[in-house]
Length: 92
Image 1: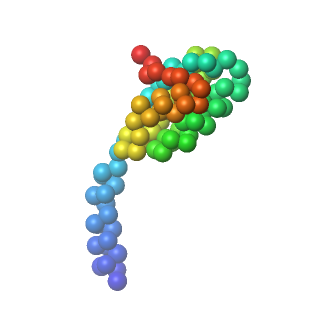
Image 2: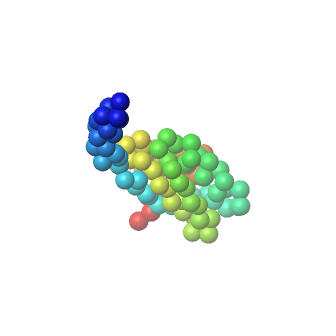
Image 3: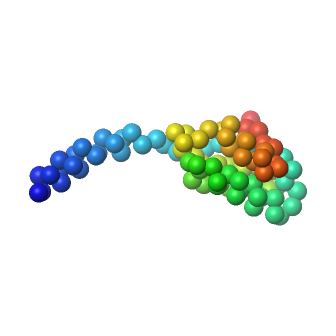
């Protein structure tokens, strides 16, 4: 039984090497004018599959999003905020 566990562990180790490194993007978000706007933007981004973290800066009108590039794209993030009423573009 012990040999089985060792063999199973050895077989699974290479899979961890295939895990992707999280990526991040900063979006310039339009229409954020009050204290509740960032809540809506954050929730819209958190609903996107693959998003692991969202930080909103109301003053700078930006959203920093950490995500798994195997599960989503920046275009999907932009669409999520836009559909919530807050059009966004990639920060330059």
